[in-house]
Length: 179
Image (cartoon, rainbow, N blue to C red):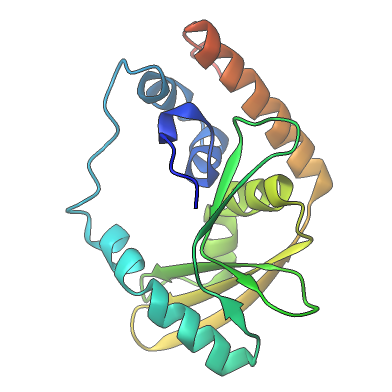
């Protein structure tokens, strides 16, 4: 895995923040005007990190699909500032990414798909993979797998937003408030 500074590009979580309209705070972080939030004491974030290997094991057990569970970082072929740090890759003929989520017991696949749409489409766009499996724990009583495929129209809009945002970062020009 390539080590790099998250401030040097746009990853999947950043894509979600752009999609949600959090341009100014993200811009401040990328230009060193502000420090990113410390997530080391955020329980849901830490639960997701610490259950990821079990999530991969459970996905394999439930689907029969084999996963390369080492995290890997990809960079977009044309826009090197765009990266994807994926949880795993499906081995064999079924070329796909695996993304692991551990969310609250009251959520559902539709909510997860909506919440992480930009991240998932960003990953597909950066890697060139045709689909991503989202392996989801809902609390500790429910498990589901969702398959997400490319949405080219959404990806085009996301790509344009990321290029524009990165222009503001490189020029150290504050993005307009209305974005």
